[in-house]
Length: 304
Image (cartoon, rainbow, N blue to C red; front, side):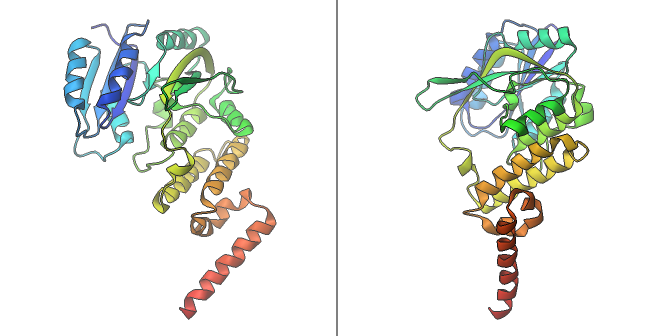
C-alpha cells in the first residue's frame, strides 16, 4: 500500500446501519493515497461484522476497538485513531457523515499550493426526509491569514463550521494538543479553539461535507443539569484557550450568550453558580436581579 498522505479518523458506536454510506463516500474519493482509521467505542450491533467486510474490500480501511484502559467516548476514540494514523494531514469524520468525491483532492491541492495549515469547505445536512440542504452562503466561506481571524469571523457573524469540513496538517496538533477526553458536550468547539489559535493560513475550498441532522435540535442537547454544567465548562476552557487572543473576545462573548440563553429558563441555578462567568452577557438590571436572588437563596437556607 502507498504511504497515506491523508488519514481520515472515524469514531463509531452502534452505527452499522449508517457507517457503510460514510465508508462508500470515502472509497469514492478521487484522491487515492488515504487511509481510514475506524475506532469502535464498544458497539453492540453488527458494526464489527460490517467493518470486517470493509477491511477486506479496501485495505486502506483499518478497524480498531478502543482499548479498555482508555475512557469511553468519541474523543478517546479520536485520540487513539490519531496515534494509529500515518498521514501528513488529518480529516475527522463521524460515522454518519458523507463527503463529496473531490473533497480530499481539492483540499490537499489547495493546502500545498498556498502553504496553508488548514483547508475548510462548505457543508450541508441530510434532513429527516433524506433530502440534502446545502448551506451555500456563509461569511466564513473565505480564506483567512490565521486561524484566529476565522474565530473572529465566527464571533462577529455567529457562524461556525463543523469539524468534518476541516483538513488539518498533522503538525498543528504538536502545539495545539489532542481532543479533551474529560468533556462530553461541545467537544468540537473546545478542540477547534485550540487548533485555530495555533495555526497560520486557512484556505477555503469549494466542496462539501454532508452530515445528518438529528431529530434532537441543538437547544435540547442540554437535556439535564449535568450537560448544562458540561457546556459551561467547555466555554470556560475555550475562554482559557484564547486568553492571549484579545481579538477573540467577541467570539467568546457570543458563545457565553448562547449558553446563557439555553440555560436561563430551565437551569437558572447553574447561572447563579457562575454569575461572574455570565456577567458580560447580561444587562446591569438582570445581573443585579440575579445577585439579589442569589443572596436570597443563601439567606433562605438558614430558615429551612
